[in-house]
Image 1 (cartoon, rainbow, N blue to C red):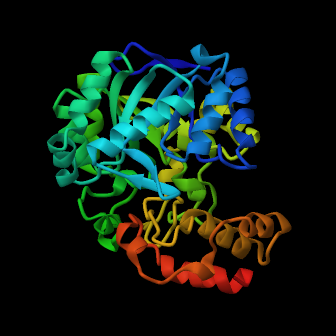
Image 2: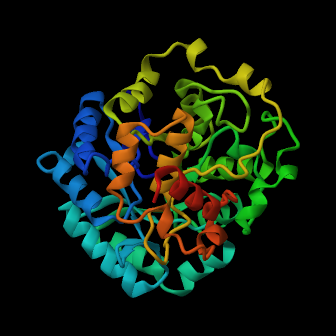
Length: 382
């Protein structure tokens, strides 16, 4: 495993990191398996954006006796309320969520305290005005977080935050498709056809400026959505119409300025090993230039990335999971037994959707979520 210095933090981090997407699978048993494998592979960095208390508790148990083996990037402002995830700018909720997180993780400190999911300039203003940034600074002063981070998908917002000098680590969505997208506070603008009129080799200048500014200021970037939610690895799902390999996606991210960690959203030990195998890959296996040059015009419009930004649902449907199992069934041309059973044990199903549309106003990808819920109810029968 190759290790990089995370910006000016001094932390030596594995360039392949572990995302938390798969940790809750198999009744949270996947978490320990992923941490066991990460330690074997030399992966010492992971992200924990989810506020699910069971996932956080599973991570705490997985780190027990080996806390020094891992560098924790965990999110404040990501809280659990009424049985589901909530992004908040309420200071008291943020404080309570942080205390719960620390208790469940069974640790006295986290290396990177990540201010969660800021995509609008007005939201960044709220983070300052509501005392969230001051709270993060206080936690750093107390040593409970060692470094302050911010997660974002918008280069304008991320740049403004970075330029304050308060943000030491930026978690940002980077892949060959996202890097085409113009900055916008209205996330729906990011997926319009006119955003994809240029070839993939032409990076959006605001994103390029962001990466270069982070490099100059010593802000380390950790990358989410390396594989575009998995779609970039499948020609039938990729908006580019052609699949990239795991190695190509990782190499693209790790060759951007200031990038230190490519986070692998592994759903199995095998997927984590596949990402770590990047370290042994040849230059030819890593090279993405020819693939990008051959891509046609692309669009992410309508593609669910399972990011859960559509939450919270007023009737507490796990929208990402329902959509994932629907897509798996459609791709299989039927309902595999494992998919049927995983869908069955969800507390709420597609048939529970009240068609209010609140989720669609929050979706960054313009997904027709209400139609997906109705289709899931039809496909699975409830």
